[in-house]
Amino acid sequence: MNREYFYSFDKLAYVKGAKPKGCILCLIRDQDPNVIDLSIYRDDLFITVVNLYPYNPGHLMVFPVRHIEDIRQYTLQEEKMLSKLKRYLLDITDNLFEPIGYNIGYNMGQPAGASISHLHLHIIPRYPSELGISDLIAGKRVLVENPRETARKFREKIAQDAFSIMRS
Image (spheres, rainbow, N blue to C red):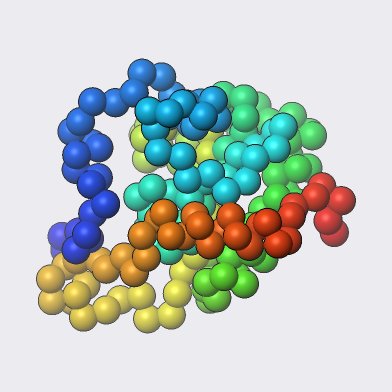
């Protein structure tokens, strides 16, 4: 079944268009003005962004500040921080979007589906009755929220409930 969005947020232009030179996540890290930055959280070790081409509203990507390509390259400090950060992001997403489940994981390496070599963790909220009439009839998915609006909501909520490594 062909699965397309009714509104693709210009992904085809992105896929076929000129790309900025370098790693897109490193460019976001460096706040390059030539890339769209939907970051919602930054610290010395990790950055969290709303996925510009999300599977669902609330789809986040968490990536280390340093460019690594394999989870075995995480330091113990990064692993500890990431564990706490994931819990925080899940709590924030639960509060904002009320999903009933999540897909959480990595696509490590191009054969595994990674289109970006810089290691990043996907946090994808799942919702009841995701399969709608448009999926059945047209083979299309309806994205119900623009990722820019999703980023705005996350930023506002994070400003109210800031992350700390001291969180339990």
